[in-house]
Length: 287
Ligand SMILES: [Zn+2]
Image 1 (cartoon, rainbow, N blue to C red):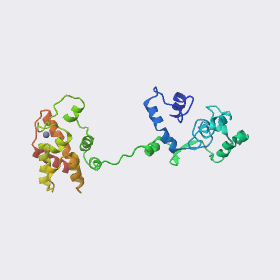
Image 2: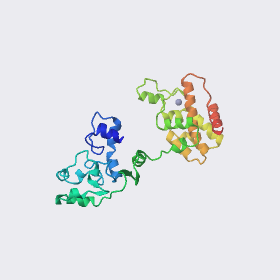
Image 3: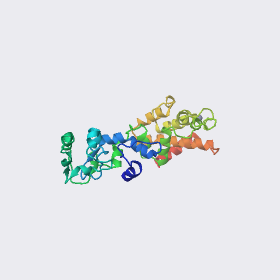
Image 4: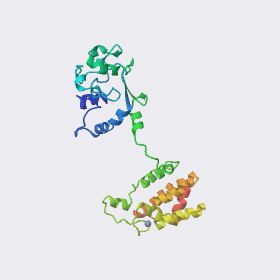
């Protein structure tokens, strides 16, 4: 990538100071977008000076030499835009022979505070070698874990997990969601044919869903009043309070069964009774 940057995009500058253009690719624009994060975290470990450019790379603790000192002063050193940092290094140390004039004293004094290592130049991140993987792990946004993650990503069947994730992200193709995407459909619940079918109706409020959860309650002896639970979130909250992992898994297994029955009815296939669907769900959970 470094070669691409220097040859294709930054022929007269570097990643650290190039200005984005409309013609640049999105990948490149994204890389430029995280430049400030990079600058705040990357350390320039100076070695032979052959990898870094003396004027345009921010090897002065996050700043370029031109940012650190007056332009007029730095330009008097005679470096070009493409001069490597090695132009300022000789025999493993700073070439103070170039900085003998008094006006260069501030630069000389600053360089004395920077170490030079007996190895090639390196970019460091968190004390180790810079890699995109390490940088990504360090700067990506860490979202708080969602409540449903333990249930969806526990030991469940993959189809239950994936369906659960789609459901909790409001991405199921319910009539209600399809209509929001301008698909012209009558947003009726295909199970009860009465109500519109947003997520909470299909999986909690629909008479079919209420009977489904009610049958499980009676079969397993749960102490809960499902009539007072009106949303997927409330149902999730109740399941999260259960200590048995198997019972928690029953939530996503139940969602899957209700969705399958809803689709069978929607597409005109033979329907099953609530009892049959609930009993089959329980059987699959235990098998
Ligand atoms: Zn319904």
